[in-house]
Length: 136
Image (tube, one colour):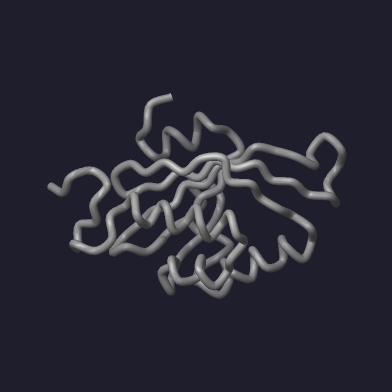
């Protein structure tokens, strides 16, 4: 059993990957974020067996479209636990209704072999925490 925060393959520690995730998202650097994605990364709603994004290109296209639509994310916190990284953020969207123009959101990233293999988006902090195995 590997110590918490270390990759089983002896590569980058989970904490190092988490810091790279934070830096890429904070700077909106899609190239740096793309370097962290497994070629067959998936992204979807929690529990969705057929996520809408099923590879690196689709995930990066989703981010590009969000930027083009004016969405921005401010990373508030990044926490790692076991093989998961929890990203807490505030998302702003100028095209949303006034009550949804600014919203707190959470993403749970599953890491394998030092790369992001799966991304799930959450509207509720408690659900995201449960998905990582972290206490509420």
